[in-house]
Image 1 (cartoon, rainbow, N blue to C red):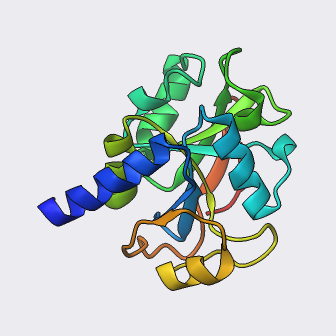
Image 2: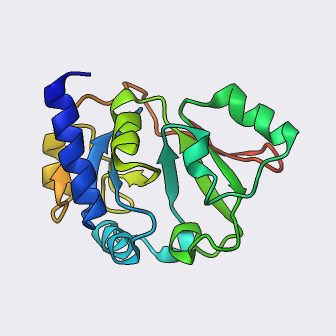
Image 3: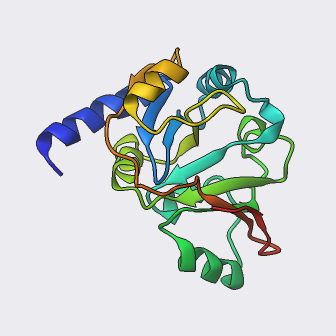
Length: 187
């Protein structure tokens, strides 16, 4: 990684630790993210999107280890499912630990998590030191942003944008239920 890119990621990580809402490229679209344990930042992100807290949010990480504080330890069978799709554009619903904040899991007993295959998104998680909230950069029901310029136009109020190319996927990640294996959203 270039020193210029590393410096840009360190700035974004510092902003995240200070409670900022940051936009960054993912596999298909730009995501909006923040520190998942900063309640005020999460609620600000939800307000920017016009998204109700009851729906829950996705966490992305650079490795499954970063997700451990939020999810119950997976069984061997579920671990195989995860390992077969991560890193990659598959988001899994896993049972949430009881202490996982409601502002992340919504009205559910599970939480949506993904180990991202996008190198810039993964590097941002590493620079931050853990997983990030990740939701598409758009107002709910509107097309998601695929460029930095579209983020600026569609998401006023975002504090920082990490510029870069998305991964080129045509659609956002698929979402699957880890307990049943059922696909809830096609990718």
